Image (cartoon, rainbow, N blue to C red; front, side, top):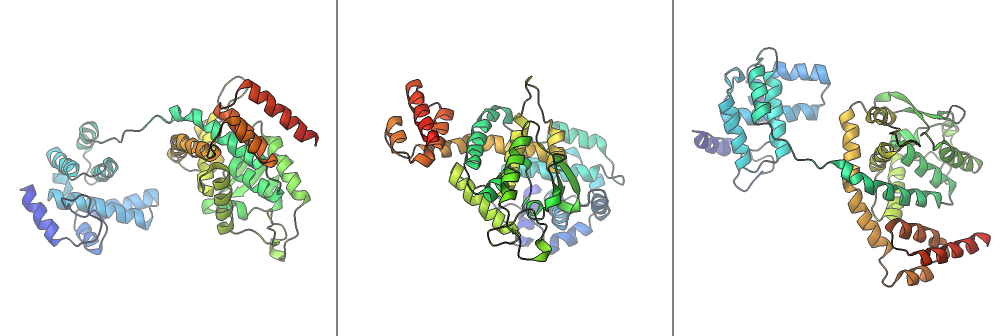
Length: 391
C-alpha cells in the first residue's frame, strides 16, 4: 500500500528540491502546490497561524513548516491528523530511515508532527509522548568539554597577534571584536559616548534595535582601556559632519562599513591563525573564551546565562551552540596553526636563527605553547629577547 502511494506521488510531484537519495524519495521542499495541499489539511492553517503569533516565525520558517507537514501527509496518506496513529508515524520514520534521511531532518519532521498534535483542536499528548519515547531520533553529539583544553592555545596565539599590532586602529577594533563579541553593524555604528570608560562598560544597540550594556570583562578592564586610549590619541577627524562622533575612523577619515570590517577580520585571522574568520565566528570565539574564564579560586566567572546576556542572545540554546561549535573546531584550528608555524623544514635552532627579528617573539611563544622547545633553547631564546628589548 505504501509503495503504491509512493510511486504515484513521485510521478505527480514536481521536480523542485534536491533528491535525498539515489532511490528518489518525495521531494522535501516548499512549492505553491505544497502550500495548496497544506491549506486543505484540517486545522493545519490554524495551527501555523498560532505558531506565527506565539513565536513570530519568519516567512522562510513558515515555508519550512508547510514543506515538512505536507511531506508527512503525502507519504503517510493521512490528511486528517486527528486519525493519525503511532503505527502511521512509525512507518513514516522507517521510510525516512530507508531513504537515508539525515537524523536532523527526520527529527525536524517528527517535531512538526508533535507540534500539530499538541495544537488544541487536535490535542493528542499520549501519541506525542510515545513518539518522543520510542521514535525521536537524537543526533549523537560530542561533549564539547573535551575540546575546551584546545581553546586557550587558540586564544593565546590570537591575543599575541593582536598585542603585536602597531596600528592602534587595527588593535582597538580586533580587541573590541574579540573581547566583547560585537556584530559588524554593532561595531560600525558605535559613537564615542558609547564607550563609557568611566563606568567600565560599552553601550550597544544590537539586532532588532535592542539596547544592552556590556560591562568590561572581569580582570581584563586594563587591556581594553589601554587599547582605547592609545587609539584615541591617534584618532583622525571624520570628513562628514554626520560622522563627527563616530568611535572608529578609517584612514580615509570615514566611518567603516560592515563589508570593510568583514574583509579586515578575514585578513588578520588568516594571517595570524592560518584560517580566515568572519566577525560572526569571532563571536563564537568570545563565547568560548568567556566559558573557560576562571577566578583566582578556580570558579567559573561567566555562567551560560551571563554569556547569553553579554552577547545579546534571546535563547540560551544559541549561546551553547556557539561554545560547542568553536570548541569542537579548536583542535583542527590548532593543526592548521602548527602547519603554518612549522612549514619550514629543519630543527628548532634553525627556525629560531632564520626567523626575522620582528617575528621572533611570536615564534617563541608559539613554540612554548606547542611544547616544542627545550630548557636550553628556552634560555637561549630568553637571552635573545632581552638583547632585542635593550635595543
